[in-house]
Image (cartoon, rainbow, N blue to C red; front, side):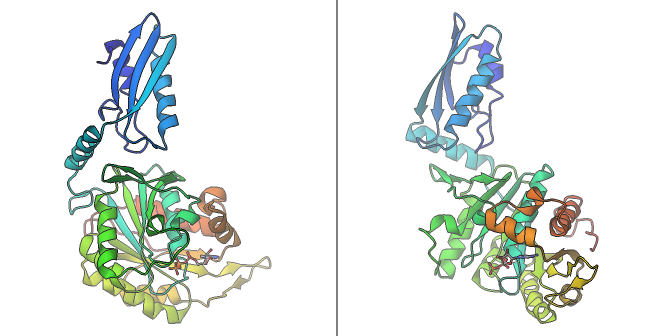
Length: 360
Ligand SMILES: Nc1ncnc2c1ncn2[C@@H]1O[C@H](COP(=O)(O)OP(=O)(O)OP(=O)(O)O)[C@@H](O)[C@H]1O
């Protein structure tokens, strides 16, 4: 029973991971108000809930805002397994297929022909830039051999399990799940195709993403199993192809885009990373040459959407887990990624129906 005097205030408290009101989730099982004391029984979904302190603080704050409440006593318990499973079923039932063809979430896979071109760095910064613009953003790190999104976002957290559902941790306003969260230490992953396919399918179905505006997927470099799996699981996804200005890289970048296309995905455009670095004397240091982005874009028949220059701040931000778009947004590389985020935000999601993104 929830005392009607407390009901409205408690109804505003939202579980930070599930992002639904606690009352709706049956997490507040009783609330009474006697003689100025609000007594509230709170049931957490799991015992080791990392958000427990925050939830309690939010409940306390909501309760003290009610006229007549002078003291708040919260009794904290844990849901019985059957109640928890019923909750998971209910959440699932409310969204049988999180990212099916009718999804309102824009799904963008970030791909590259070869490794080391800055695909993960671009993905992490783009995610943070989109989140900073008020969008609900999720990232799946599907880069099996080079999973780096958690480190780039400065997160060492793992998902919380609620029944057979996973709540993704959040960093810099971005919800994230990485293959790296499911291996011990810094081991390399040597999974074969079917296992990778199952893991990706699980990331899409068993992770509770909430209502996302954008889901970014950091793909492994190249055209391997994951690219094909992803194409099968998300044929309506859009693809950004990251390449360097090196002309030789354009051909491999084209291949990555073509694999996406073969599975029905739409290539949005090319991001040229590690582009020329402006020097103090006004000259441009073209460490990786020039023209690779244009060449890849020409081959794929899409625009170059951003040119991200070489940047010490971008690299340092990545090493420190403090994305440059947040830490130093005026850095030219940060500005280029922020402009890309703005361009993506300004276009519609569903392939074919979107407004064209203007080239960089
Ligand atoms: N514009 C840039 N300026 C300077 N350094 C960069 C830039 N972009 C990326 N880097 C650095 O290059 C290295 C490779 O970047 P990153 O790991 O993002 O590449 P990747 O394409 O995701 O690689 P892989 O697919 O092999 O994991 C990192 O050390 C990163 O900090």
